[in-house]
Length: 442
Image (cartoon, rainbow, N blue to C red; front, side, top):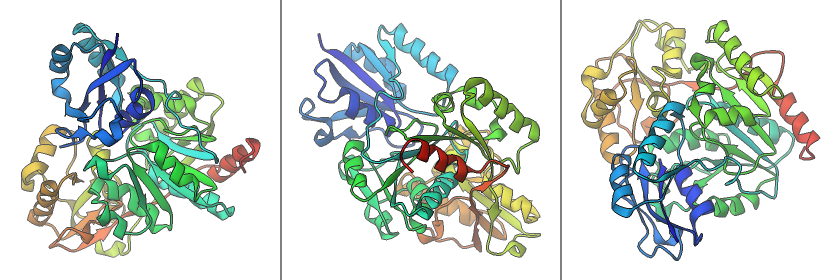
């Protein structure tokens, strides 16, 4: 008997799990993917050229709200939960709904879908979205390149457009972002790495991506998304923690798995978090994974002209996913505004246009800041209109992407940068290089 399957996802881990676990497996027939977290990614199909011979029409991608109806209509046997940064309780509520409809509920093991690379892999993951993976990844790349290693970054997938055109994506210049029609969310992740002279791969088929990356790398750095586990088997696994959300390392899926798998546990933002919350995270790591080497880190913010912020009424634009499914009320832009003496953070909510107003309605925890949402052209237009409607002296961009390249902003603007800095006696460089040497990959 062939088992009918639904894969629950958010345009990333779900496609990888299909490619590695379900595709060309005669035991299963995947009748649908469901989509959550990211606006507008449903209504597409996983294309036939990726799905394999058993799916000549591809596989439909439906909203997660239709899950129970899909189970009933197709008499689904199995639902595979395949996306990240979800509270443990929500995962089990979903499991209860699935089982109430008569289907089995499945979580695929973290290591089961990891691909083997022919070169060392250093993975940078986290326990929540917005912990500071990106600056940590850049720091890891700097450490490895200083040792003379050819480093290629492979980023967790963000295929929010035409999947048949996103099978393997390679980014080396800014022009590549336009060629691949990148969303703001993609640019936020890729752009700082490319600006550092790094080659970045992403896409849909990570076996094909791995083959391409291996051709030009001595070491691959896996740059994780959300709090997901790596798609490649790691030589060294680094997990980043956020003491502003102390305790979340125990209560979010699969962030707790990353904590348990960590060789190096980086507790970031110790320069802005209360010491009691830093200690809470340290205690949780010690209890769950005492063999992990703990490194404290800062995330200092810099701007080109601090005097231009002092005394000004500032609109802060923050990284979108950090605020939405990451659950933060603010980010690096707010820290910079406060650090450099802004007179006021202007609340953008009364000025929100179109889909941006909808974001504030769905994510009521967001403070007086504007999430940089731009998954689709109409959302970019709404973001631009919202920014220009706000009565402010300065727009402070806390997002890593240079939004001024493709938005027409009518106010003065400034970009916030934030980087990795060691925050204690233990240094990330020492821990990483020692582990690579011990494992024959130095």
